[in-house]
Every structure is written in structure tokens, then in C-alpha cells.
Amino acid sequence: MASNPTDNSQQRPRHRNGPPPPRRQGRNPPPPRYQPQQHQSTTTTAHAPQEKKKPVFVKVDQLKPGTSGHTLTVKVVSQTSVPQKPNTASSSSHLRANRISECLIGDETASILFTARNDQVELMKPGATVNLRNAKIDMFKGSMRLAVDKWGRIEVTEPVEMVVKEDNNLSLVEYELVNVEE
Image (cartoon, rainbow, N blue to C red; front, side):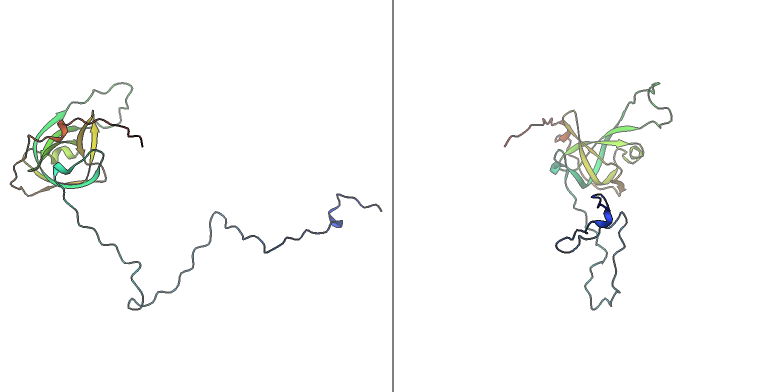
């Protein structure tokens, strides 16, 4: 019998140098092993619940373009409803109409335009004092507008005696985006 070079039974197995490669975990690796918990007095509190940070209230004159996460107490000076375009055949008829109003709000340092949407319109009545949490600055035609999206909150608070400084309206300042080369 002649030996056939393609016959696998006659070939010697190849040996590798070193240990075998580590086994790959598939798509679902086994869950990590947990050690039993000990008493609180002997361990550090690694999984203690995080304490909430107290909000840092800012004044209106400290607002800058492109910033977010502001918490401030303001007074509503005026409210102007923004007219909506009528429904056209191209837009979906099952969507509800958005209500938008622009409110002039401010404190004793400055004032700014606030864009109130849908349910926010009822809260922003002239003369009301509100807390805005997680507010952000939107740029509209080069000027600043304050807005609160779904991650923020508007709370009507007890009336505070403050004189709004309307002559320092930050929404009247026009900004221009400039690219800086290094």
C-alpha cells in the first residue's frame, strides 16, 4: 500500500508551544460570582445610595450660549402666543397641535425670553414666580432663548417680591458662531 499524502490518519498531530489560548466567552458570559455580604460595621459602604446634590441657583445674567442644567427662580413678565402653521396634507393629521408661547422672564439682574411648549404654557402666566430646573439655552436666529425640555421641570412657587430688570434683556444680544483655529 502506498501512502496517500491526503490521508489524515497517517499525519502526526502538530504541537503548539506554550499554554492553550484562553477560551472565549460566548454572547452570554456566566454571571459574576458574588461573595456573601458581611455586616455593615466590618465593610465600607460601597453600595450606599447616592445623596442628591442640592441645586445651585443661578441668576439670569450668568446664562451663556450653549449651556444647560441651569436652576433658577424667575418671575414671568409677559406671555405672547406664537401662531402655528395650519395643518397641511403633507403633515400627519394624527399628531396633536403644539402650543408654543414666548414668555419674557427675569430676575433682578436681567431678563430673557423663555419658550414654553404645550403644558408649560398654563404654568407661565404673567406675574407668576416659577422655579426652572435643568433649563437649557437654545439659540434661535443668533439670540438666546431659555427652554425646559422633558428632562427638566417647571414649578410654580409662592410669589416673591422682585423687580425684573427688563432693560437688560439677554435675548436682544445677537451672537455669531466663530471658528477659532489653533
